[in-house]
Amino acid sequence: MSLRRRLTLSLCTILVLFSINVGTHFWGSYARQESMLAYRSSVTAAQLSTDAAQLLENQRQQILVLETLRETTGDMLDGDELADAEADIASIDSKLTELGALTSEVTRPQYEKLQQASRYLLDSWLAFYRNFNDPDFDSDIDDPLPFVETLEHLRQLEQRQAFIAAQRSTIIDRTIALTDRITVIGFVATIFLTALLGFYLLRYTKRSLKRLKRGTERIGMGDLDYRIADFDDRGELGDLAKAFNDMSDKMRRAIEDVRRAKDDADDANAAKSRFLANVSHELRTPLNAIIGYSEMLQDELEDPGEVDREQFRDDLEKIVRSGRQLLALINDILDLSKIETGKMTLHLETFAAGDILQQVCDAMTPMLRERNNQLYRPDWSQLPPLYADATRFRQIFLNLLSNACKFTRDGEVHLTAACYQKDGADWLRCTVRDTGIGMDAAQQARIFDAFVQAENAISANYGGTGLGLAICREYCTLMGGHISVRSTPGAGSEFTVELPVKVRESAPASA
Amino acid sequence: MAEQATILLVEDNAINCEMLARRLTRAGFRVVTAADGEQALRLMASEAPALVLMDMNLPVLDGWSACRAARQDPRLKGIPIIALTAHAMETDRQSALAAGCDDYATKPIDFPGLLAKIQRLLPA
View 1 (cartoon, chains in turn red, green):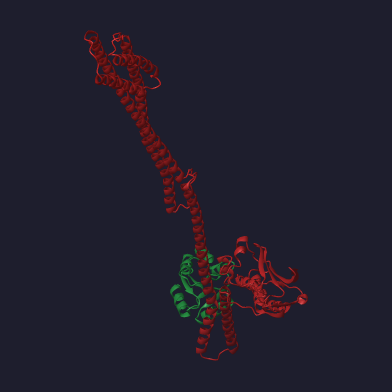
View 2 (view 1 turned 30 degrees about the vertical axis):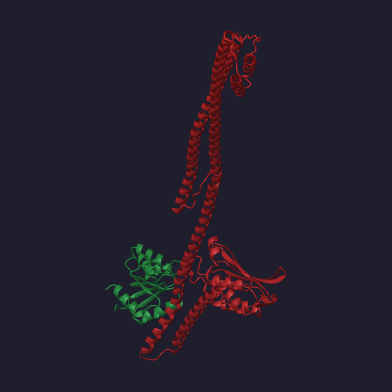
């Protein structure tokens, strides 16, 4: 559940409880008010009953006195006295009417009985007053029964009213007690629930936050594989955990990338250092000859006697040869550097591939003889003219053939050339195969990388800067072709060069 | 200078081998040459040279292996060896000394310096 939904739910619960409390409070207040009203009406009714009873009693006494006077003295009742008596009776009647107004449905029978009795009594009293002066009027006013009945009914009504009031008051008291209880329970429940919800919310949220915090700390300490697993919180915190895990993934990938890049850079750096050491080694070998022969010739010139001119020319020839070797090496390094910085341009022209390959084979003769290798070459006459960079083409095969000779002793070197069609274009495929020391798969995978030789031990044994094949590959790529190798350790290697017969001007730049 | 002391020169590069052999001959030594490590070990046994100048980058058996082999052979271990190499790093010098060479000279060879090293190592 989301944090927002959790908070909303808690708030709603608390609000509902609070509303119940407020409602109960109003209910209680209403009940109290009702109770007050009932009490007041019962007090009023009791007062009225007492007053009415008192008035009835007084009137009765007065009538009995008047009756006695009338019989004994024959006094007359003047107009004022009659009016007073009528007003007194009307007052009693109005008290009883007031009492009727307070009568409910429940007490109605008692009231009607009272009304009946009182009506008769009061009517008889009124008749008494009005006919007081009539000597023929025979009053039965001293008959106490109607008066007693009226009083009895009044008393019954009062009792009934008191009973009803007591009953109602009991109900109302019960209601008040109930609402009070509900209010207290509601209040306590609200407090308890609020505290519980708060505690639960805090605990639940805190647990999630704690896990997030731990994850952050772990990641911070470099444990990039750490993930917040089985996160049961599906709201904002769940999203946060997911985002956190995503971030960890991305960070790990980024750091892996950086590490890889660093490793690559370290490897390249190490390869460059090795390359520099090799270059230094290779430069020093011809330099050693140049300096050594020059110093030796200087020494010989210091010697007395005739200089052996033939020997002298031979020695100078060696100095020149070493100098040229040095130059070729320097050119190789510069070429590769140019290719690597993208500054190498092709000089495309049409030439006979066979002628160039023939020249390369001729140049190999001394090296082949030195290692006692036999060269097999095809009939070039069927090869079409090539539109490519003749210098680079020659250099590729000089490198491949001299490698084949260098790594083969008392063996064979085969050169083949053939045309074929690919994607509607003419291509030339040349292979240089030897029966030399060969390479394993790992060496083959790295053999075309610049600054890399298959193995330091091999360079130690066979010399070379490790630049030849890198240069070959770059030249092939520049001309839109490619070079590949197949080899078996101990059985020999086969290099295959594939070039378009017509190299396009916009040949792809070096890789 | 010792009279006609024999020096075994081990060098696979023909031009450098010839040059150094001629200069050593002019300096008064008898020079025997070998083109690889195995040949060097054979000649050390048969010619009993007073000193060996050993190139380290050799075919068949490299200079380091040849040195180690010579140092383990009771007949050959007394013969001083000077390493000659085009590797100019400090680590190369240490690897040569670790292989059992007595001294070390970097190509291009400073010839008077090399002669001094030879004199110092030749048996009195």
